[in-house]
Figure (tube, rainbow, N blue to C red):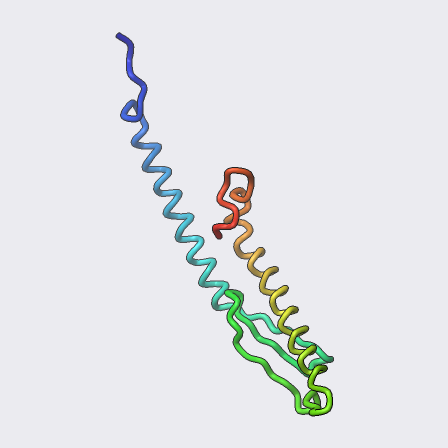
Length: 119
């Protein structure tokens, strides 16, 4: 009878250990990247600086500042539009920063059969 080259054969254990080390390193790198995003803030403005939106790169709103001049009781819609514009700009800045930080870690995982969307 010939040799059985199943799961228990040869150097499979060493390959499995190497794979586990790589997986652990990737997990540590992902956690570090997520912490970096949580600690990084973006600042977006609208209305010529009359509205300022500060958001962390893990998509948590830190603050909104509104200049007194932006508050017009007769034109609340303008203020609402400026807040929306500032928020949307902040979200775009967050997405760019997330891609910069996470892209190198997830770059090869987004294809067919990959892990795209999990990170």
